[in-house]
Amino acid sequence: MTKTTNFRPSRRHALGLAAGALAASTLPAPAQLVRGVGRIIVGFPAGGPTDTLARRLAESLRGSVAESFVVENRPGASARLAIAALMEAAPDGRTMLVSPDAMFTIYPSVYKRLAYNPATDITPVTPATYATFALAVGPMVPAEVRDVAGFITWAKANPDKAAFGSPAAGSTPHFMGELLIASAGVQLRHVPYRGSTPAIQDLIGGHVASTITPIGDYVPHVAAGVLRVIGVADRERSAFLPNTPTFAEQGFAQVVGRDTFGCFMPKGAPADLAARIAGFVAEAVKVPATRDTLRAVGQEPFSLTPPEYAANLERARANWAPIVKASGFSLDD
Image (cartoon, rainbow, N blue to C red):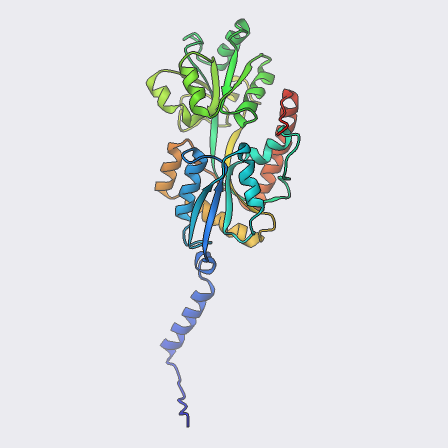
């Protein structure tokens, strides 16, 4: 025979049970979502700014939507291979893409045939950081040129030398240069490179007159006195070079833009899951050690909710489309 004991909890015990039940029902999202190993896809080789961000997020997001995260580098086809890999994944939070926004804002206007629709084939989660662009000149340009107007005057007087380098054809810096050309009424030949490093090396070596790259790339060279940053393409001055005025301050208000590095999930990701991950990312980039690491590669923390991010990307697509069209630049593949 089974003996039954009537248990009557004390008031203290009852309160303890109630508190425990309440805590269980309001556990932070990480404890509710932990499962398996996740991956963060990056469309660039290891070591660059996008990869650096992804690896910091992989560390910070451990135990959030997955027990751990690995970074999967899928370079090739200007990061479009990475986007294809994301589109093949399940929208369960265990696969994310970390990428510059250009793949979803500029590429639709640049590529004649794009294998994805940026408005419907991915789920924007949140930006994590942004990088500010700047125009720098090197020894090819006379030392007395210290501002954008002076550079434009020099460029018009030296059309055979007037050029700007960018990290890649079809990149955001490329079209920041096109904005400057349209705004200033000047002809500048575009010289595309494979990354910021070779572009800046050629600038310092006197092989190209100017470059437009993320401002963080210039900082050590400015300190060494081998180049001059003369204009910042943002609404405010950059903390990296606070003494350098913006283009707007110098009368070129149209020359403004950022490279935002964001997190994306596959199409069909639940809205509540995307919102939770956005919250995790926003907190992760505020951690001092992470923030310092990202600032070392020229990035500043920046967050939005998923709906805000989707709207931001849509506005950027609309803004860049006429600029790309006016440049006449396009790519078949």
